[in-house]
Length: 175
Image 1 (tube, helix red, strand yellow):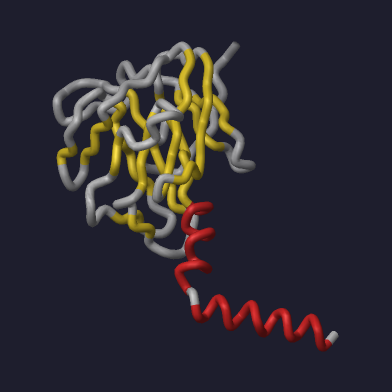
Image 2: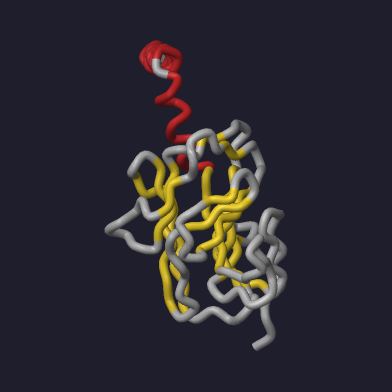
């Protein structure tokens, strides 16, 4: 019993001495790819009047997350195709959408464009922080205006009710 108390005390002291160590695992595990649409025909329009593919992230933690070292990509060997601008934060429980439009610019503060597009036939999306892969989603053939969203168990599921910027609502397409 004394040994267990000593170990817990040591752990508590380490966490107090290195608070970033305690937060790092929480932050990285709390940022997720929440929903993607690889065949956007009419569900979400950008400010150019186009319908590019999009990727939505969610912050499931109780703390804001600084996204300035967060990257998105469609290539595992080049994880930093898109990097969020310095000063971009994601509040607790909030969502952020990035258009996979092929454009290399952000229209701050509300619209972000990654310099790659998604393939509706088959693709991977990679989410990294500080150069470390923290989440990925893989998919095969996607139907127009049907998104792939995490359900309540965290499993990617197709839904005919895309919800970019909002909580997912899974309504499966008819087969």
